[in-house]
Image (cartoon, rainbow, N blue to C red):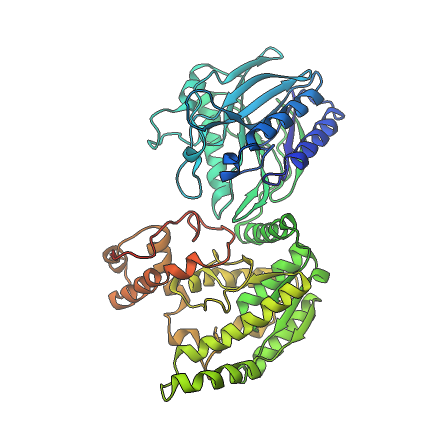
Length: 540
């Protein structure tokens, strides 16, 4: 059996555009002599559709598009993800479904059985679990159909039922899994181990087809694959790009394509996230405030990869406190990247604001207020340029800063997308060195100099924070692993430092609620996957 894999990049809610993509892929694969074509989970509406499902006509119109797709099919069947209205309850609910379309009609529909409600997933808000037969006979073979999470309950206890157990008992000849599985660091190896176990349990090959592309905070990496009954990879689609692939089931030649290593995957994921967030939102250009620091440098390099150097503008916004080396580093970066570059001084704005505030502040000593005036002056100018030029402003703060509030509301937090807000500072350094592996793009001085916000003379991040290796380790334990103060201290960190960092994390929840959406790159990112109350008193 020749399987056609349609690893495509849909746009959430673009029912007409996604239908056109599906039909085009079907025609291309038919031309290559396939016997069966597989699309990702919820492909026709894009994943995740969220509250679009609650709009009056959305699911109805989606059903019409599915009918159009089915009508375009010939004798070669295609299985495609969509949303089906449930008639099981009186309330407004749906099935996460897949349709087997052939000879101009929808021959059979399959329903997702396990509905994830952890991390970024909230499927129980919209869907009801399916319970119908998950098999179809085709070309003399028994084919089992599953949708994403249905195979992720292997040897786990998060659900009361295990669809995979039932599938294995029915002895299929092939298991198909339609997925929209978002990427994060470590996901590639986790997914491959899972498919290895699934194939071994079901004793049959597994064809796994995953979505690709960026949708808001989520980046889908594709990396679709077919594994044999022993779990060995037979063919693999590339990561972070669309691919139409044909695989002859039974061939034993492994694909020459290999998964990029982790830091390269991070670079590709961020680039795809920026590209799709911008282009799917109607932006062709982006804007970045270049401080001469490593965060804005990495963000700019990623933006150039995503949108092309001709569509990226960098602006230096010095004040009287800004060092000459920072100004020079910003200009050198722009020259290395080949992007448009401008310098706009904020000093007159800062002086004017401070002059207006002087009668009100009287003789109060300078503090963080004056520092924030500088950051907010930069935000004012950057947003003005963004509005006038129609360029998406990218914010440049990293996860470490966002965690402890080392950022200014309505200042450096201004913008439409927080590119590296889920990348810890230590990893930003690794990413910068990786970007430079084939030649210097990010100035060496930017990487080697001590990090500084430069909001007061001779300021360094280490004046307010522990070294980033220590900070990131504490944040990983507290934010991502949910460890207590006691557990973190027991692991070897000074209690005073741990308590200070945790207090800063808790105090700055309000900032994160107001931050631009950020691209998810870790198992637990700030944003929709982490729901901590702003007003709360628990700290342990």
